[in-house]
Figure 1 (cartoon, rainbow, N blue to C red):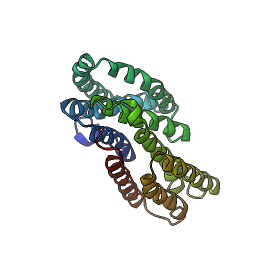
Figure 2 (tube, rainbow, N blue to C red; figure 1 turned 180 degrees about the vertical axis):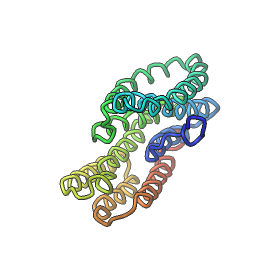
Figure 3 (cartoon, helix red, strand yellow; figure 1 turned 90 degrees about the vertical axis):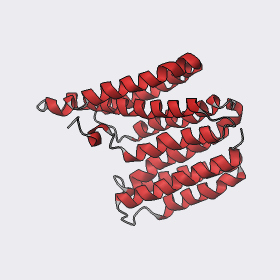
Figure 4 (cartoon, rainbow, N blue to C red; figure 1 turned 30 degrees about the vertical axis):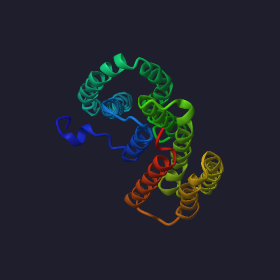
Length: 251
């Protein structure tokens, strides 16, 4: 029920690492992290949750016409969480007007995700890739709040994009497309390409990205349970965050 806290939290567990790691990396590589980072991080998570409920309302309103209550239960969380996001975001936008440009840049990707949600195709490969872009772009935003220029932040942002884009086909090979050889080959190819690019960004990135390639090549077909797959991805995300902060930290 809408009044229960669990009903307000989006159940897309894999999204939380994608939301947190780029933002925290951008925050911790900055020489001057401060209150704007904390406020923006809270607004970022609240905004994601509000958009999630809004998209679920659109999807269920379209596909569950015989059960209007299924869609209606998302209205209150969407409105309350959206209002909380706006309350935190408005002072930030007043203090840092360029954040409005960042929001405008993310809007097309959110629109793509909303279209897929309304069609009931949230698991589509293109939808997952579209979600990765603004999430990784938040590294640039967080770094900018800490006075790190984009010229110094684009490499860790691209590293995040390489990793999280690779997780989209990889996770499918572990769960929904676990019997697809085509998906496995595509996933391994993507990870190999990501490793090649990552090494150009920093030789130290070869360490985590080699591990990512190995898990993409060796784990599919081993019938791992989803919680185990999720735990592995948490460890991979933590390794990426630690590497980015160690390599690019200090602004």
